[in-house]
Image 1 (cartoon, rainbow over the protein chains, first blue to last red):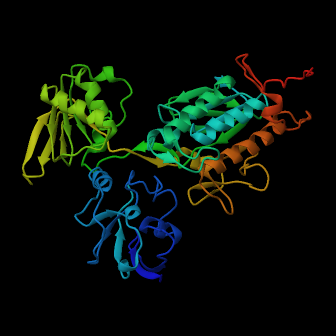
Image 2: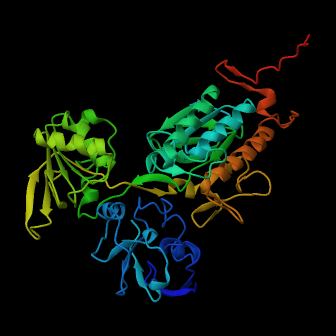
Image 3: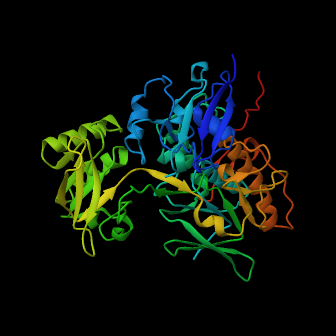
Length: 109
Length: 353
């Protein structure tokens, strides 16, 4: 298991290149929180159950991601600022195949 | 004026359990919560989700945990001010705090315990031009009195439980209910989805999906909404309505508590975790997810612990001259304020012949 690198653009437009472990059962929302790239209380409100959309992000690179579950799909249908490349960070499990992933955090809503 | 010993702001699991621990010390509690029901996030966001780390419960649904807590604290007769948000705090001449809600309800107590979680839940507002202008003039985010919609024409937007449940309820109250959602699929209890289907078949609910409300029209009050179907981009349907009810869920905001002079760090209230979870203002405590200290974990079980220590400290503040030692419930039982009494059955002491 190796750490991977992920590029995250925060809500202020600042780019962060961070190292992410792949052996800690972590998802993208938790990674953002662990580096404090968005203020506490504005991301991961529901804890990662695909029930709040506070971790919405836009996928900028061409990585193949796991398909959206029905729950994620339904939550995105109720969220704001949704784009075709929107995903919920909490539903993206960090694996080695995501090395080099580039994402932009969606605005707070 | 509502008077109590400990005024608890937030009726989530931590706030509810504080009532129990306070009750053991014969202290009365009153709770304020912005949501219309107790339970906080557990009841509002994920009542049907299982929790696995409540000590002694290998698995418990969040909603059941709330029901159990309500049952556990019932003997201590807590008061509730629900559907109102704690807005301001003042100190009166006796040194007691007076907390007033957004609806003007006043509460007085020597101790305030903030158990506010991530904050009070505010409706998430869709991104529509002129939305602010029509708030309370046709646009409503929270339904408090369904009678206000009798014989009116409504458009409800959203795809979750609340959009479904209110469409069902209001179908028999309003003259016309139109439900608009960005997808054909709805996320809700199967039962609700089937009911909406039945009401649609009976012509009592008009369903427009996949579609979105894209505009609001009216002079002083809302007169019509513009709805765009996903298939006809750029072409909007104009629908005359009296009310537009967007139901896109709630998001927590720390809100007015942030202006109470408390020390705030990362959207949380700083407390002294070495003793009693007191804030920088003596007599005001913060417990559960709303507080922060070195090593803080936002877990329900940590909130229970914090509530327990907070109440001991509150007791000493209220009764500085009284001596007290903690008593196990197994030994002391529970003496409810309602006159009820629970205690361990006495062991049988009898000779065997």
